[in-house]
Structures are given as structure tokens and as C-alpha cells.
Image (cartoon, rainbow, N blue to C red; front, side, top):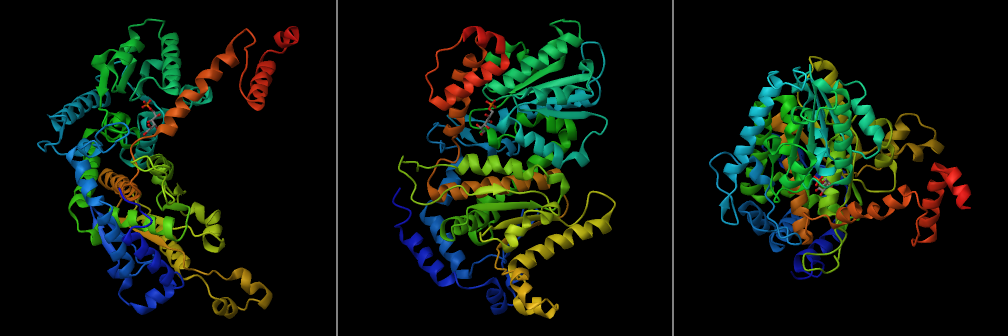
Length: 549
Ligand code: G6Q
């Protein structure tokens, strides 16, 4: 693909940015009384107000021209069609097939994958109904009351986030826990008050070779067998696996009859709606899980069919490009005004940064512009009492996504009003700030005025839904998935590989025996790494080290 920077569309945006950068949000609002209702769009049950962004109609027109010139729409259609757009791994990218309704046809390598998706969903539903009804019995004949999902990265962040987000709809008489870190503390804390005879472990690993997950799965097996009298047949009643690797699942000792599969065309960070979400289904039930899939699908359809000027993921992706590459903003803050979404920013960090943290284009050349902004955030109103200070008065531009809901899931609706008032007030304050005149009018002494001035002009998106349901959550996740896609397509990078993460998976392999061997190892690292290894060995075994001198 031709150079991004020197393309006429990019150049036009750069010229336009130079004319617009001095314009304030206040001026834009003063010039157009309808702006706050005009620059809005709706899709899949979500309302997006993007009027408080540093854009004009011309900006949006130029960004949409850029999208067309960079082949975003053709690439989107190729993804939905099952083409192998994950070029470095030569794979199709078909998380959209995970939520395709029965009867739709999506062909990969000559095979319609939708029937397989539904076959797995049906098996998951049958299994989850059995567990929830108390019909699936543990080794001692007791029903399952605790579900522990073991996985890491894409095989953990989605399930944890979804469980927290949808807790309102979950079985409160069951306990759900998640173990990801190889730090044994994670395992011990998650299991310390559980009885093995009532516990089901779901081992989630696409490859079934990941160090952390396999280590924790072995620890879980040992823990279970110890409590259940060492009888290996207990494993079948207390362990199920979610994986694409049947051979390794079998090697671990889990009957493949208790394995739920998925496919190489589902990326880890795009897998919470596959069998990786089995814990979600056990928590909220198969019907609610299908509602979540319907929400994902509604946003997929919106992305596929809605004209650019009303297309939520496209608009959000293009706005992110605008701030990242023209204003030089380095981050995006995601601020859900919904306590249930407390893990949503952590989930998005992987989705956005693992996808678009790339330094070369698909043709292997170094990118010409900054890619992958840093996504971060915390729920409001808590963040207001800490880092919002920097957003309001710091020297960096931080575009923010505010997320809120019309209705609470509690009966304390008055208190919900306080929450939403804060959301709305923050977007207003960030956009319009507080002028010196306003500060003086409050009787502020002159020396204090500059400290209390807020410049405003801080851009925000506001996303509103009716209430947080499984359907809304699906739509919200798909919205960000497709926004990430849009950005990656503009940059012409592979948003679906993760070679840096793969490297991380290999790195410790060399050091593990050097820490654990009883014989002093021959070390050939740099002097810092050698010293750290020796220090750790000495700390663990001072006597042996003294003998060795
Ligand atoms: C996701 C990444 C990564 C992956 C984990 C777990 O897109 O590739 O986060 O999900 O490393 O991998 P397994 O599922 O194979 O254990």
C-alpha cells in the first residue's frame, strides 16, 4: 500500500488541522446551536454524542475520505467474508462468526463455520444447564457450587470483565473465581475457602501450552486430588477444558468429551464470546449469554451496513486517529460511570494495545505515524477524585470516552442520578472549562486566579445505553473491536497478530532452570541479568552458595 503520510487524504487532513488547531470547542458550539444534537449517532442500542470533539463537518468529511482511500470498507468486508486478513499468521479473523445467527453462512477454506459455532454453543448450553440445575455431580456426589476459570491474557481478561459486568444477572448462590497469574498467590487466594468436591475448574487456553495456565491447572489438579483422596477419576468430574488443542488437553488428563473447542480464526483477545466465555454462561445462563451474542451481532451489522457518517465504530476509530496522529495525543481514557464495568478499561487495554501496538505495516515497512494509543481508565466517579486533575489542568491532551446508562440495575434510582449528573458535568467542564472571568466572579484573589482557571477544550465522547444488560455489553465490546479494526486498517498494520507477546512466552524458559537447578549454572547473560540470577539463588539457598564460594 502507498505511503500514508504523503497520500493526498493525509496531507489534506494535516492542512486542515493547521487551520483548526486554534479553534476552541466553545467557538464550535457558539457557531452552531444544533451541534449537540447534530453530532450524534445511534446503533445497536448505544447513543454516541461526539459533539464535544475538536472537529468540524470538514474534519469528518476528510477523515471519511481517508477511510475510503485506505481501504477500510473493503477490509471490513474481507473480514466478514472470512478472508485471511491476519496476514502474518495466515489466518481468517472471524470473531464476527461467533455471534452469527444460526443459518447465516460464513465460509473459511471451503467450509461454512456457522454450524460448528452453534454446535459448540449448544454443547456449552447443555453443560451449563446441567451444572446450574445441580445435575452435574462432583466426585463425591455433591452439586457444583464453585466455578474457577484458569487462563491468562485473552483467555482471562474477557471472562473476568464479563463476569463483573454482568454480576447482576449471575447466580448469587454460586461462587466464581478467576486465576491467571503464575504468582502462586493468585491460586492460593482463589481457592483458600473452597471445597474441592463442590468446585469445577475450567482450564481456558487456546494453545494449551501457556506456562501460567498449565502451571495453575496442574496446581488445581493437585489441590483437587489431595482433597478427594487421590483418585484420578475425580479429574473428569471437576475439570473441563476450552481449547483448540485436543491432543494437549488429553495429555493433561481431561477427557476430550469435556472439552469445548474453538478455532484458529478466533484471536485470544477476541474470544470472550467463544467457549472461552463458558464461565460467563455458567454465571448468567445460556439464554442471557445468547442475548450478549445478539448485542455483539447487532453492532456487527451496524458496522457493516451503516453509512460512514452514522457508523459508531468507524467514527470512534477515526476520531482516535485524529487525536493520536494530528494532535499528538498519546492516550485515550475510558471512564465508565458504572461500577459493574470496573474491569472494562483493563479488558480494553489488551484489545486495543495488543491489536494496534505495531511498528511495521503489512508490507513489512516501518510505520510513518504513531500507532496504538495507550488506553487506560477507571470507573467514575472514583477517578474524579484522583487523576482527572491531569485531564482538566495538565499539559497533555487526553481524549476521553465517558460511558453511562439511563437506568441503574439497583432500585436506588435517585443515587443513580447523582452518578449521571457527574458524568454529564465532567464532559461539560472538560469542554468549556472555567475562564479567568468566572474564577474572579467567585471572589477569588488575583494571585489565585491562574491556578483555578481550567482552559477547557478537552475532547470527549459520551456513550449512553438504556441499562447495562448482556445485550448492551455485547454491543459495547463489539463497538471497541471495530473501532480498533478501523484504526488498524488506516495504519495498514496487522491488528490480529501479537509477536511481542509470543516473545514474552519464550523469554523465561531459559531463566527457569538457571534459578532452579541444584548445580551452579553457567551464565552467559549480561552482567545485570547474571547478578540478579546469582542474587536470587544465594537468597534461596545461602548454605549451598557458601560452600560453592
Ligand atoms: C491474545 C493473546 C494472549 C493469549 C494468552 C493466552 O490475543 O494472544 O493474551 O490470549 O497468551 O494464550 P492461550 O489461550 O493459548 O493460553
